[in-house]
Length: 194
Image 1 (tube, one colour):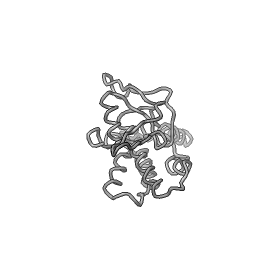
Image 2: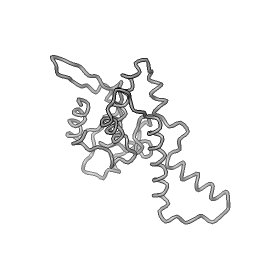
Image 3: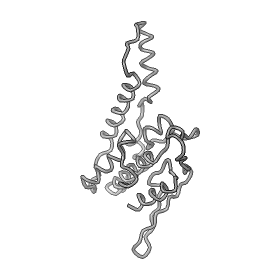
Image 4: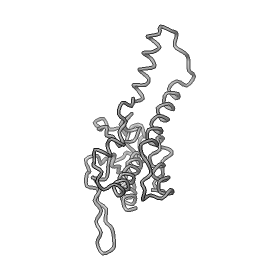
């Protein structure tokens, strides 16, 4: 809850973190109240609310295993990509609670998509196959939309397969985690729900 409140405060001032995980968040309890500190601010960026979302792209953005699909594909950070990281943070925390001996690399293995192709790689592969077969390219009415849908389905499938429900997590809270980790940024919880 405190991490969600911290995100809301940052978002209220048009700041986004861009990338965070359990090792970036420090929670301190003092006299029954909790204080949340975001330790790693290396990806903290001011969101320009006066421009289109597609212009909030970080050219030097690093791809990390827990990043939202739109970050991996387009280096596009937003409140929705922070929500995606929040889902991973909650899942990682509850899974670590269930398995205290789990190491950081174990989380990375569960979250990353080894051998998984990016959207542009899928498009290139389809084009190469069409060229290699020396056939006329099949006209697909919404080719880009079809490829995007295929990509989203595969990413969601991988997430469902790897992010199992932690034992200490209620069904409702697990549903919230899965909503935070939705492949489509528009389907993730909004600021008011976080």
